[in-house]
Length: 526
Image 1 (cartoon, rainbow, N blue to C red):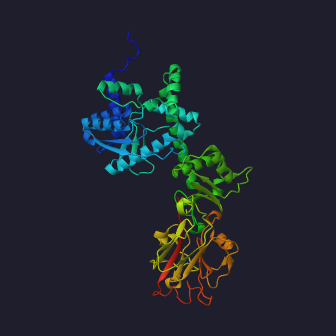
Image 2 (image 1 turned 180 degrees about the vertical axis):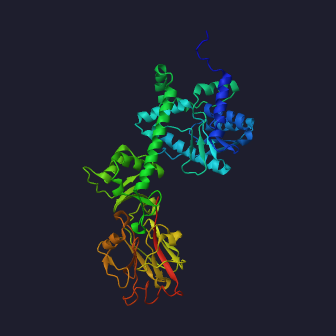
Image 3 (image 1 turned 90 degrees about the horizontal axis):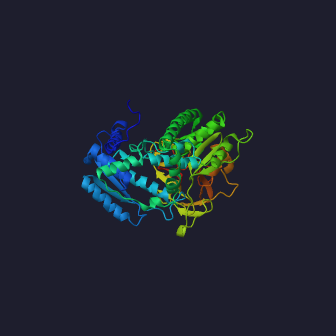
């Protein structure tokens, strides 16, 4: 009677499993004949990955990328070891030293090192023209990642853990791949011993102060004692989560198309959304809260921002649907260095404004500085105390005249496409004159043409659709008269104070021989 007991895999089986997994890269990706980057730290995982890549693809196609963090005293020895291994294999070896921020980042030294490592790998791949970088993560790493995400209360994107392959979100044409992900560490160890590989054991992997190490040494062995197939089970959880997340992403994209509203020029919004569209609050409120949350999460991911906490997401949702069906009243919500804005049936993102700094790096009040300057044909002026500059462009080609002859559409001037309304004025009207900027004090009035009514700045902001958070800008005065308001437009009367020189009088823009100047405020953003 034939035995039904499975035969334990031999060392040769382990070698075949590893090399077959690496070989599948050529069928799962579009790199059948291109060079391949291998992230090579010198540890067991990356040593097996490099050796198997050489066996499958040949040394000539392989580039080993080593990232030197300098976090360990033995880091220089690891660099020497990796260079020696690559020389023996005949593999091109490229190393990059990275410096981590003092004290790490707000997410800890592990996150800072990971971010620096991935960015360095991107740079090395770009420098070598390599479209794919292979990483040595295996099934044990995947199981640990799923457990960590579960314990942190992650959603589906977190539970999906590490994909077998993915395109880099910020680097078109670059793909990451983890061919060893289906294989256990035990399989890699048997491969390494059978192939006679030498590798580095990083003693920091035994430091239980790091949460992953504590999980690996204290928790996973206890799980393995009762659930021997936990790696396979948790890998299945990751696959289910990834499939479910893909469905939610598809739904979010459909809701995005349904709710988006193209930005208007007078929204005064530079870099508003992903990309150049906002969402309609009215359309959003037709969705269920769960679908709105799903759409907001998707929007955050598309912008490359960190996932919002449950509390922050609830705050965003409250501004859309409110409590008891009454929307919230906040104008914007800050998150991950950007702001989510709510204004006139629209919701959109914009980068947070950068605060100007004074001497010695001292931050200055973006709204609080008065400054004077003489215009003698300069191309720009950055008034002290303000985060940004005024741009002065003479004789810009094909500038369209609007109804009030004082605005410039963004499309007509790509070099000045920051979204602020420009001011079109004869060059001679400003040349050699004293220009002053002041913060808004309240009660300012201005007209946008010689025969236009005198209106308060508040009225001009409202009619131009400028949100409250974009009104902290410098007001430009000539000879004591307010003549340009960013995001609104400009007006300059002649010496008698009766004519608008941007439309008639001393220098008519209709006269082709009159040199014209386009003035625009360009705010600085982080």
